[in-house]
Length: 340
Image 1 (cartoon, rainbow, N blue to C red):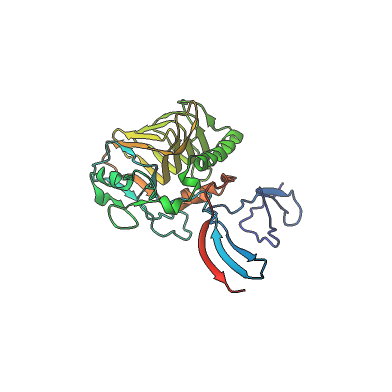
Image 2 (image 1 turned 90 degrees about the vertical axis):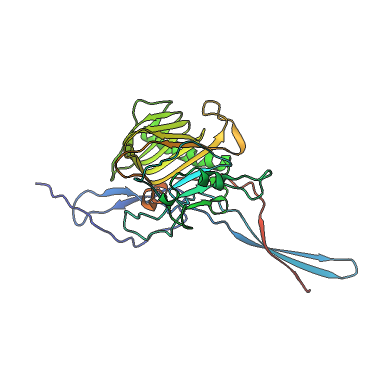
C-alpha cells in the first residue's frame, strides 16, 4: 500500500534573489517517496520608480567653479488599483445608473482572504488630467449621474468618487501602458487555452480555489459568473444574476453595459478604459479616450461592486508583467547650488 503525505507548510532556507521569471521549487519528500514540484510567484505590483542624484560641475578658463545638484525621480509604472470601479478616461459617457435601494458600490477592502486590509479606496475612480486643455470634468460627470449618491461608500465620504490621475501612475493612465497590461494577460490566457474571439458562446468560469485567466478579443454578452481575471477588448454586456470574483478589465473599446433584473455583483475590481479606435483595427489613441458605462435595472437581492484586494491585487501577482517603458521626463524633486 502506498502512503500519501500532505504538506501543510514548509520553510524556505534559501529564497535566492535576482529572479526575472517565476522559479520552479522542488519539494523533497520526508523519508522515501517521490519529490514534488511547485512554482513560486515573484512579488509583483506597482513600481514606484527610482530617485537619482545628478551632479554638474563647471569651471571657466580663469578658474571660477560652480556646482549644482538635482534629485530627480522616474514616474510610477506597473499595475495599480485604486478601488472597486475605475472609469479611466476623460469625460466618460454614462447611461442609466442603479436607482435601487439594494445597490451598493463599496471601496472599502472586503479582505476576504484575511490578510492585511488596504486603506479605504474610492468606490469609483474617475480620471481628470489637471494639465488637460480644455479641462475635463470626469469626476463631476460621474457624481452627477448617481441617483443614490449615498450608496457609494469608501474613501472621502459619500459619494465616494475621486480623481485617480495622480495615484494610478503612467501605466494605468496611458494607452500604451494599459495595452502592455492586457498583452501580459493575453499571453497567460493563450498558454492556458482561455483565449476567445468575438462573442464566444461560453468562457471558462473557474472556482474559488482555481481562478481562471480569460481574454475575450471582442464583445462578450451573457450573464456569466466566475472567478479570476477577465479581459474584454470590445463591449461587455452582462445581465441578470451575473457574479464575478476577481478582475473585470474592459480595456480596448472601453464599453460596459449591465442590465436586467437580478443580483449582479463584482467582488474585486473593475476597470473600463478606451485605448484604441476599435478592437478590430486596434489603432492606439494618443491618450485615453472616453469610456462608456451604464447599469440599467436591479433586483430584489443585494447587488453592486465591492473592492477586495484578495480578488484584484493578489490575482495580478500571478501575471508576469513588464510594463511599457515610461515616456515621461524625470521629475525634479530638489535643486541646489553648492559652493566649490
